[in-house]
Image 1 (cartoon, rainbow, N blue to C red):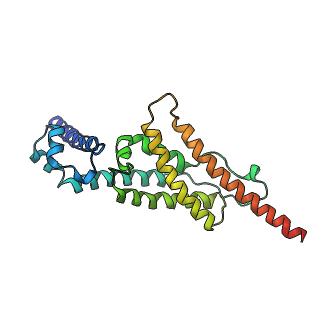
Image 2: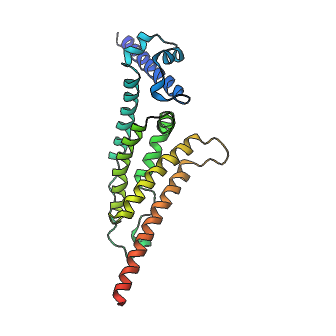
Image 3: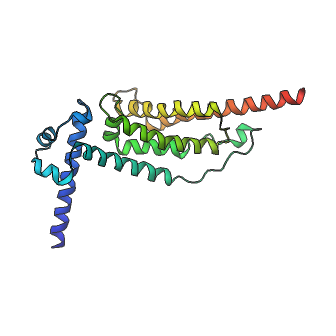
Length: 219
């Protein structure tokens, strides 16, 4: 009896996954909210009744996909190990950790684990712009925490950098997930590329602060 229930549960999971997979395939060529239940059923070779056993409609289908992604990315960020905060701007090379922080590695691990869904969601033409807006809020919070740990001031430059860095998160992920030629970068190389910008803005900030201090002393 238990084995039969397990088989039934597995089959149900497979059917649900097939519906989602078919829907994501369709979004490649058509905006997410313009796809019909009929198109999904035909692509997944199921009946409308089967579709409605799992989802109330297209909006419910998209909401369930997005909520699963939000749950995973939040869980990954919540699992971030604590970072020691930079307390001195005097000796950048000695005090600053130039290794990629967890937020960068976890972002690309998340994208890799959900490459098909994220490729669709981040598509500016066919994806859900509201999903992107909500994701930006989550990443924004993490980037500010990262820069707090890096010891950077909470000024206008930081807020401008965070906005640009979020867009680069999406651009780098889209480019990386869609690459299929001999010049495509590994996830480590893409992470290193983004991290070099983090290190650069930190170095320039520290350098500017030190130069300002030296100028004030010489007056």
